[in-house]
Length: 140
Image (cartoon, rainbow, N blue to C red; front, side, top):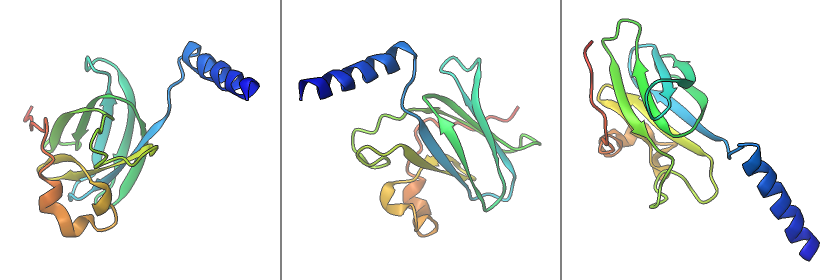
């Protein structure tokens, strides 16, 4: 038992020393008529950490961490930003030990999809849209 604990501690320490952190994934669901580019920036908004393109009516998966999410189309007629965190104390969006979060790209912004609506999200757009935290639209 003691050797097993030591192995776990050594592996955890090695992960911390190497800077590794658990990988999270976001699945973006595009409910607009536009092709959307999603960009994850660091907290300062200076460095691109990840990006993906989501076609209308389609989904895309991207490795994510905490920072700022931008969603825009080529013409910039659609442009939303939100602070993005993986903290979910209510477990409404991430289950225990889960590493995948689902987000809806809609005409009103970037919204987290609650776990119970992942498969039936089209039937729950008004409830999902209540997740409006930090969704300013910018016209630049």
